Image 1 (tube, rainbow, N blue to C red):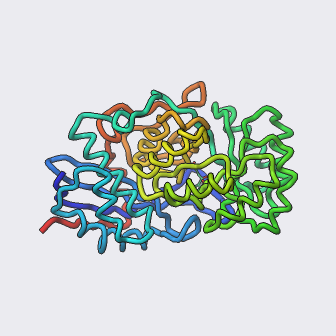
Image 2: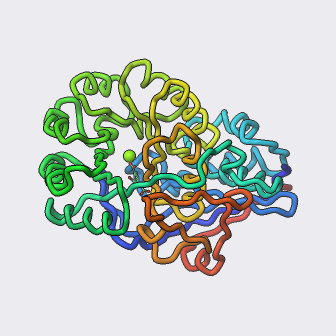
Length: 370
Ligand code: OSB
Ligand code: MG
């Protein structure tokens, strides 16, 4: 499709409750909404870079710069037929995966709207609804954490992930396990440990966890192999997997047994699908991670999670777990069986609430083909 314009909205949305991880605490979530126009159609994508470089090195500021100065000139006025062509065009831009992924998402939305197909249909998704869990930030105390877990179980979530960091892991996770002996439970350290300090995580190995997510350095795969050799609990990698190649390295090295697929982290949905296909062929379980997405990114996550290899519940919770007001008219709700329905409308299957978008916009820019 010949791309006529690209619009960026830097937005900030208040979270219903602060979200604290080993790298920081967020009360408002920033991201960039990307709009592509082509052939009388509008496609939307979400760039999940946040205000601070805590999860990885990208921020809303770096993404804005890369999108405006480098990605836009490669697509404006150009015929971009599909995601593979888009990836070829941006291959000369090193890194900046979150920026690239936002545009690829908008392209999929355009293509789906043109063809009258949902992302799920285009990807070959096999499920109409996907199993989901909830990711719970670091709380004030172990007792507060147990109360928070209880509140989500009451809402119907049947899998819980808790954020951990040094000094805030064993007591907290043990308390949740004691309160809920049969709960599907997992933890996420967001790279807060070293091979040495990870010794402190050994007691977690006896808590029957589904997985331990990204305990070590974000730029490392090898030391995860060393740690995995000492644990019976599967290690799952998030930050360390930046491409389908990394997925192969990690599995060949036996650095992990499970992969968290966040399409944004690997530069786009097409790359996330490639990792899914690679893992599925090897019977390696994957699940869909989250970045506190708006309704736009949430629709995209649900679509990819409908692929058959996503056998573990994703971090794709209901809209009300994150935002009182979202930028999509659609809100995602939790079904009684801890699932969320995959959108069926053309493209992402969501519509933008322009009023809400205006309310949350910090700055806006439109770039047009010459
Ligand atoms: O590591 O999975 C992570 C949120 C922001 C940055 C990193 C992570 C997360 C989450 C939240 O765990 C998942 C969600 O969107 O509910
Ligand atoms: Mg993670």
